[in-house]
Each structure stands twice: as structure tokens, then as C-alpha cells.
Length: 184
Image (cartoon, rainbow, N blue to C red; front, top):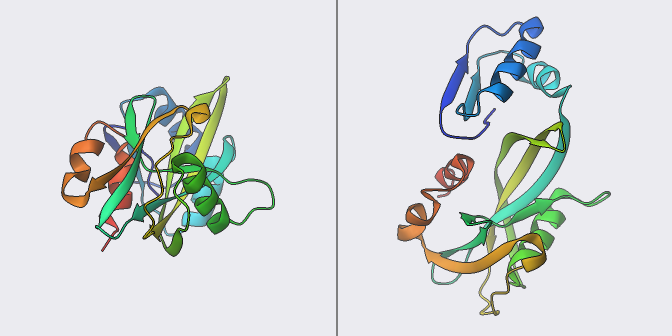
């Protein structure tokens, strides 16, 4: 399990009765970014961890072009990868393609394999949320105009050389680094 922000907490003893205490600790310590849970039964631990959280499922992609550049969006002043919520009755891969196209204006994208799934928690209108984002490799040869989806707060869309990607994402979300570390 990977949960994101600037520091980490290792939870060693996996007692299901301790999970509510862990959630309280995790949500009250915003400096904690990564949670490592050591357990032989990850499905049960995840079920108990998430029982008091409202779940949002999202999908997105790491889009590469013919120049081996990666597509980034800038939203609310931070560079990010394009992603968004999965609609009811929509498959996760279809959502990933739709969201990337909506947020960036890039069409004719080929879907590759799933890279990973990241998780992060946040508070929305007083409710504790858990967002799982399914990340895919994506490819395009198109030279479509980049069009930021301004109604979603996206200020800019840009192709970035792989060698420069960490410069752009240095002040962004730590979970993105785990996504990019899974690329070939």
C-alpha cells in the first residue's frame, strides 16, 4: 500500500483492532506521507483501513510522445500527471483515456499496460476521503494542440523531456514519483 505526502510512518504490528487508531494518527499528522503496513493479509487490512473513508476511484496516465517526452498538467500551481474520476459504469482504462484527453486536448492516445495504483487521503467538506488512482502507460504520435481544461483548474499543459521531469515534479505530489519509478 502506498499513501502520499512529505514523510513516512511504518506500522509494524498489524492488529485489526489498531486500524482505527492508525487512521486517526495518519489523518492528524499531515507531515506523514507514506504508510508502510507489514501484514500477510493485505486485503483484510486494506478493507479495515478504508471502512471509515469515502472512496473515490480515479484513473490517468503517463503519456509519452514520439520524442520520448512526458505530458504534464499544471493545476492549482503544481505540476501533475493527467487523471480524473471514473464515471459510474465506466471501465478504469476507458476513464484513464477520457480524462487524459479532457484535461490536455490530446487525442489518438494508445493505452499501454497498467503501471501501478496509488492511494491518498484528504478531507473534503468534513468527510475523510480515500482516492485510489490507477495509472497506465500511454502513447501518442499526434501533434494535437495542448488545451488545458480550465474548468477543472488546469492552467497549463506541457510536453517535458524525461531528463527534466523530476525538476518539474520536485514540488509536487510524492505519489507521482512512485508512478514514474515504475516506468521502463
